[in-house]
Length: 209
Length: 185
Image (cartoon, rainbow over all chains, first blue to last red; front, side):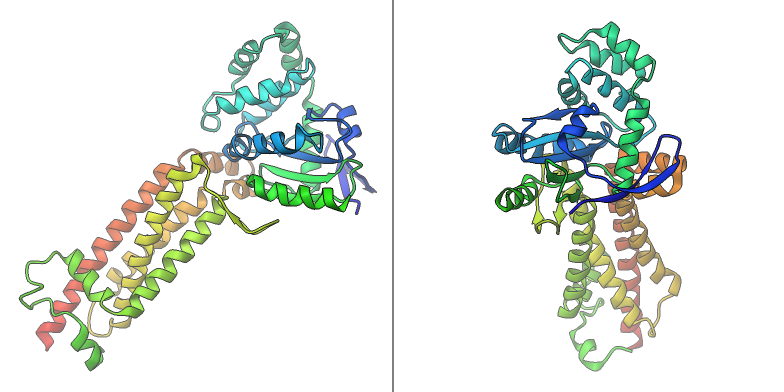
């Protein structure tokens, strides 16, 4: 099964309907942060917001088990998609996170933000605090990060992620696509599902070959 | 009107055993001495508990049916279930009063309890509806969503307070109803 959807570009223009898939190698090539082996047969695309407490629930509960059971064993690759819709500061958090991906530090930054999550729009992901968080990551060139962040280098990239999520009908975070790595046979999941739910879908896909 | 069998079963508030008893306890005994009202309360409580578990993303039906309670959701789950139990009691008491409302009681007092219980349940569910508010109402929706997300626990505590108030209100009316009934008898 291939997903048919409208791609809406950053100017809000609806282009022609296309039969598009989201193969893992394309997502990686386009700059989406990912965890796992590039040759993993299954891909999970996680659309999340750093201010979303349910995303944090996923990060604390299901994600470590998925990582241990499927990512570390090379069966699954986890791709992060931005869907910053929970608060007015969410976009800045997404932009900062994508800037850390430039230097291969996305997941450290991701974990740092979720472990320090505070109430939405309470200022915890203000521009200043995001820079402070970035400065706590060892090996991150803070000057390069600040240039990227201040110039909103990844604004259109994040917007494309949002458009993509909307194309799939996702309105809430976290939302997931579990698919074969060539983009076929996608299954949409919504919500901070427990590990068992992911396991059911992944095992079914693995056994289906 | 109360049937003869109901009159026999209903505790008489002016009897020696009920004298001096708090209206809160007395009204509870009056209503829940009948099995059907226990059923009403249980159905309302279970229904509300299920709905709140779905909104709180503790209960999922797809891809498998599963309930799970992560650490961050324990407090909310406890509060939601306290609300469910209170809601069940208040709804059941309201049904009791509605069924016997021909005898007496002002309609405003009947409505106060039920409207409060509805209001409080809305308070709870709206805390999980932030996503929908945000996507449908834009910036105003985001602000509303942020408010209900950030103040989920205080909103639930407010709901409990409202339901306790509703319980107090309906208990007084129920006791009053039965005192008047005793006088009529």
